[in-house]
Image (cartoon, rainbow, N blue to C red; front, top):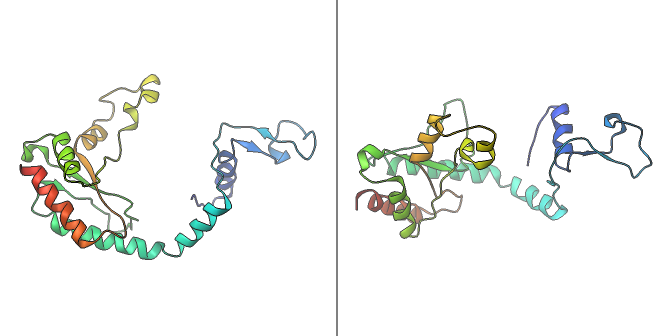
Amino acid sequence: MALTNNNKLAKKMMQLRSHGITRDAAHMTHAPDGPWYYQQIDLGFNYRMTELQAALGVSQMRRLDAYVARRHELAKRYDQLLQDLPVTTPWQHPDGYSGLHLYVIRLQLKKIGKTHRQVFDGLREHGIGVNLHYIPVHTQPYYQRMGFKTDDFPQAERYYAEAISLPMFQSLTHVQQDEVIAALRKALVS
């Protein structure tokens, strides 16, 4: 879902969600050939959702505040459980309020004596569904072909070398969260 209160941006988003196509004659290069006529005036995507997807989205919106509140509870608990481990927990600016889509820790690799990959694999071996969000965009082949290269954004690359996303979802139980922490402890020291 994308929301905005900017009319110009809203029109652009509607256009991009439908292959960059417009049926608005005011945006066309010439008068329409008939009521069926449209023009593709920009490169876009097929981001139109079905009525079923929209209904599901509306039903989920009713639960959003509770989901985000639960994620904040889990994040606070993670923060407490991780205090004595060689990891850096997420920081939130006091004026901000995150939906906490992810809970990303950064490994303090100099204190661990293991590689990022070893810790990641150790967590996966214990059945913990960790992932890495995100790989620096400038290292992707598409952007490399545009001239971007490794070392262009050293902080993004450092983040990538240290980050691991721990499980974070509103139905995560304290028992499951304790299992994540226990597996992380093992992965860091064994």
